[in-house]
Image (cartoon, rainbow, N blue to C red; front, top):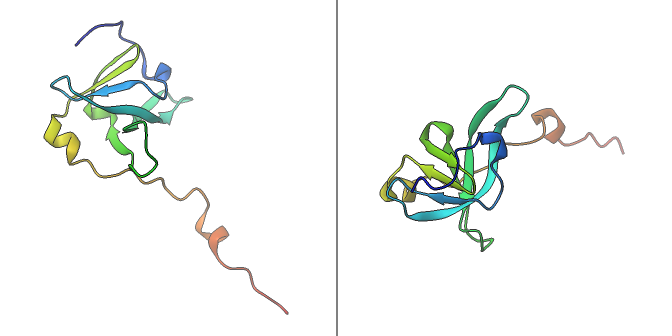
Length: 105
């Protein structure tokens, strides 16, 4: 399973293959979350790489075992991966900007 050279989280790319701890393909990287300026890796989201009906799942950095060129190996077994909750993005606008505007007319 440890083919390829280890790489830093900063070089992870969308589409890299994601494996569970037993070496089974569980999906493909969708998004990488973190802070490049502070060099903080939060985790990845992954999905099946195909249908829009399939929700991406989030894996925190603590559950990422290996990062190698083209692949991510998780510390989670198949059952744990299957039980991951779908990823939901946080609201990108401040709550105050979501309030309806007053209509003076």
